[in-house]
Image 1 (cartoon, rainbow, N blue to C red):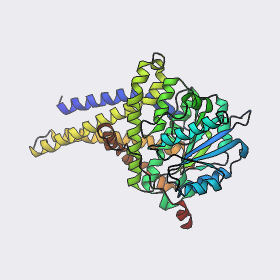
Image 2: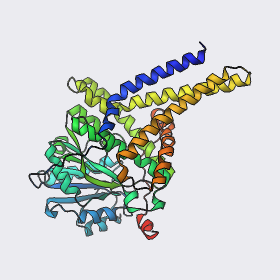
Image 3: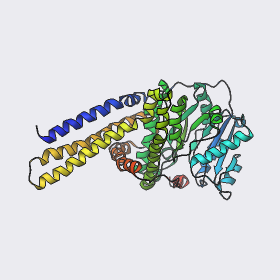
Image 4: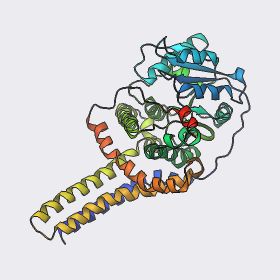
Length: 426
């Protein structure tokens, strides 16, 4: 048997092992189209909407408008807008909408803004709220968002995740829906429909995202604020701490908001680098803490569902090395006129093809899972089906940067989409 045939068999064996390890996560995909039972709250709880809004005056207007249209009793919820400067135009907009403004001048990350705001509330009115909901300034709330989040508290969970829909599809036009934005938007379907839906049903730890995220007040009081400030992804720190503390999470699809996707590939990649860097840094911080805790270290299902991305990294890393190594060998063998160049090139094509095929299947299921909320013409969905796997393959260098370089750890401002201009262009 030729060496390249042996290498192929080893690669296929490694691939099979990785797929077997990932099966519990893959099983979540089976729940992607299952409708979730509605909950009905037995009481009207007091809610605090916390909105980090550093330099967000161009984006926050739509969010403030949607807050004013909530069906939930206005006396039962308050909006707290957090800015970094007393000169921020956001202040006047927030006050006009009836929100309270908090100026946190020394914030170096979103976690700083949340922590100071929570500590201020706890020092003044520690029992005022039953739950705190974090919402990014570029979002838009469904009119029943607060009402449904109150319903979700009937689950008994300490941490609750709302469904994320994509603002670009509902409030923009073709200019706000470039291919890069549509590709990145698939991630919310992967997290919610193809992940959190099943996790909520089975009591597993949900994948927390830092907007549309609700914490019960007893958790906030226990923490004395928001302690997750060590990385640029405060939501990932929270997710690992949930495992450490043994808190219950819940995902509720009937409470939803609209998130914004960047309208340029460059900004999208900047977001992806920052997010993945935070994912890796959060695991580095919390993995030793969980391992050292005799109770948390035995929460095997919860640990698995917060760390199973390593299996994907491993499989993609093996496939990439397999493809590159064989491609280099094929070029060299071809130069020396060896007939072994062909099996080497075959292996290289199989390695790259395997990555593309895996992402293709994932994309196809995602498009089916959230078909009605991916508001694109059918021909653009077909284009997305074939392009998204390539877009996801861009994570290969991004993971490398996050693992081995110091880049992506700064809390830089992100360019926003001008949806008002999009509406004018319709």
